[in-house]
Length: 305
Image (cartoon, rainbow, N blue to C red; front, side):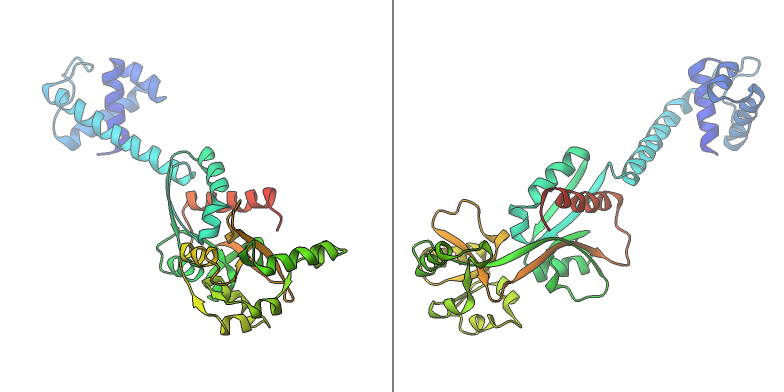
């Protein structure tokens, strides 16, 4: 039993005759008749009465709703598969470091959702190591995070943003006053900020992003840390209670923060390379590929690398 035979059968029923069905199918009347005969042979039952080929037999009448239902389901499946293949339907899973979830990703998701309104998006936030691990285990299709946490050869990383590292402290902290004084006396904007040695007199709070200080002179701050905090909410609570200072990438610092300030870190001047990555030797789904391409294009257009 062939799909085309079922369609030809319904054409005859819906058009009320073989000639009209042939016109609709863009086939000869003889071809339509032969197709119906083959279907009857397969079913071992006549579908149309002898001598009046447009009149259904009782068996033929019982077949009509079942064939209509089957072809409707088949057409729906075909439409869905084509939509998925073109990236118009489906589901994508994305893991991201929290700083991008709050600042970069919302704008990208707005642009993506406008273009692909029927795509379901699952968004998971995690630290840089967790983001990479979720990708490697296949839990997500794409990931956004810090390239220094990735050393596997099977990951394809595309840089998006260079995110500077800075000092975070209370606005009333002497480090902020020192920075402001230096800024006033500075002749060039490039000289604004703080050298890492200035932080040695302050209690230091270690957080996950402080790994970016490793293998630099500022790594001494990590070794003298008084507190170690993984959760960003806990980190800001300690900072607001004047329990110390820390370092954070600029994107991880909240906009319009009323009590804290972010100050550029100088000597060393550090940046984390934020990007989007996927498995290098695995084809991702069309919706995920569409997000990947849109994300790269959006950042190139709206952000400075």
